[in-house]
Amino acid sequence: MASANKIRQTGTAVFVIVLTAALVWFGNGLNPLWPLMWIAMLPALWFSLRSSWRSTAIVAAVSMLLGCLNMWHYLHGVLGAPAWVWLGVFSMVAIVFAAAVLLFRALVLRGAVWSAVVALPASWVVLEYIRNLATPHGTGGSLAYSQLNFLPFLQIASITGQWGMSFLILLFPSAIAIAVHLWRSERRRARQVAGVSLGLIAAVLLYGVVRLAQPKGRTVRVGLISSDEPGYATVSDPGAPTERLFRGYAAEVEKLAAQGAQAIVLPEKLGVVIDPGTRQADAIFQSEADKTGATIVVGAVHVAAPFTYNEARIYAPQLAVASYDKHHMLPPFESNLKPGTTITLLPRPQQTWGVAICKDMDFTGLSRRYGVAGAGIMLVPGWDFNIDRTWHGHIAVMRGVEDGFSLARSAKGGYMTVSDSRGRIVAEARSDSAPFATLLTDVPVEHHGTPYLLLGDWFPWFAFVALAFAIAGLFRPRQTER
Image (cartoon, rainbow, N blue to C red; front, side, top):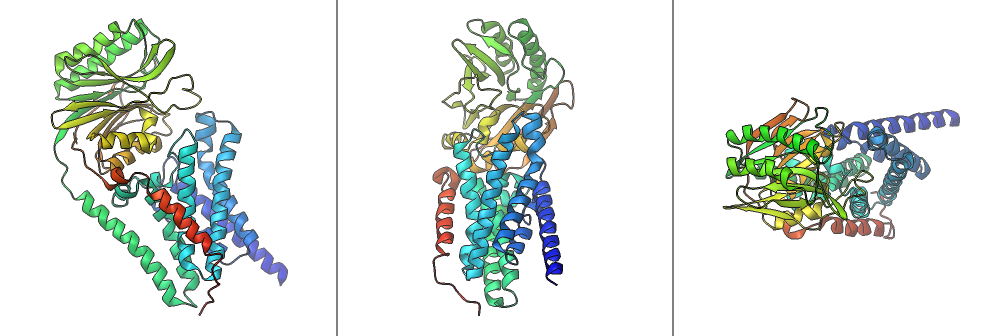
C-alpha cells in the first residue's frame, strides 16, 4: 500500500511538473498565448496544498526552470549569452517561485488565506522590480508582456505600470487554488476569497473597456521604412557605403512624403558617420526634409572621438540637424558605445514628438520622462533579431499605455509597428516583406495624462508591503478550519 501511494504521488508530481512547465512555456516567452499565463501556476499551487513542503519545493522549482527553457535558444543561440547566464538568471526565478509557493502553502495551512492570496503575486513583483533595477535588460522578461494582446487588461498599466499586471496574473490562480482547497470545509471563506479576487479583476477589465472606448483625438501621418536585404541589414561602413545606403533610403522617404507622411522613421544603426565629415551624409536626408516638409529620423553610429554613439539623427525642415543618443545598450554588442543622458523633444504646433532608440523602451524611467514632458508620439528606430520580432518589438507598446503616447517604431530584423496610447496596433508590417518595406498610416498624437505618470513605480512598493503582510501571517495565531 505504501509503495502504491508513493508511486501515485510521484506520478502526480511528474504530471504537475510537465503541465506547469508546458503552460509557462507557451504562456510566456517570445510568442505567448496570453490566456495560458493566467492558469500556468495553478497546478503547482494546487499540488502544494496536497503534498509535503519538500515535494512542493522540488515541483515548483523544476517546473519553472523547465518552462523557462523556452528562452534558451534566444538567449544562448541568438544573443550568444553563455549557458551559465541563462542558468543563473532562471535558477533565481525558479528559487523565488519555489519560495513563494512554499509561503503560499504555509499560510493556507495556517488558515491565513488573505495573506496567502497575495504571497505569490507580491513575491513575483518584488523579483521583477529588483531585476529591473539590477540588470541591463530592464523590464524584459516581465509576465506583463505576455498580455499585450489582452487590451482591456493592458489598460491597468496606465495606473500601476506593468507591475500591477504581473500581480493580477498571479493573484488569479492563488485565489482559485485557495477556493478549491476550502470548498469542502469552509465554503463561505472560499466564496469570499474567490469573489473578492475575481471582483477586483473584473473591475480592472471594466476600467479597460471604458478607457478603450474614449475618443482618439487628432492624428498625424507617419511613414516607416526598413530593409533586411543583404547590404542593408547590417551597419554600413563609413564614407561611400553609408552614403549609398542613405540614398537608397532617401528615395523611399521621398515616396512616403509624397503620400503625406509628416514623420518618417528609419531603423537603428544604418551606417557610420564620423566627425567632422558628417555633412555629406546629413545633406542627403536634410535636403529631403527641406524639400518635402517631413521630419526624418535616421539611426546611425556616430563617431565623435574619443566616443562613439548609437544615435538617432533628426532632419526637420529648414532646421539644423538634431540628435538623440541611445541610453541603454545591449551587452555585449554595444558595450563599446557611450550612453546618452538627455531626451530629445521635437515641438510641433499643439503636439510634442519624442525620440528614443530600440532597447531604451524596455525601461520605464526614460519613457516616463517623455510622458511628463507631454510627448504625444515616440519615433523609435530599432533593430531586432527576427526571432524576437513579436516579443521585443512590442515591449515599447507597454510604455505608450503607461505614459500616454503613441509609438512609431521601425526595426531591421523585426516589425515596423505603429500603436496608439491604448496599446492598439494601428498598423504593422515585417521588415523583410519587401526589398524596401514601407508602412504609411495615421496615428493619434495627442498626449494623454495617466495616473502612472503622476505616481511612477508606486506599485512595486505596494508589493513590498503586501509581501511583508504575507510573511507576518506566519507569526500570527493559527486559524483552525471551521
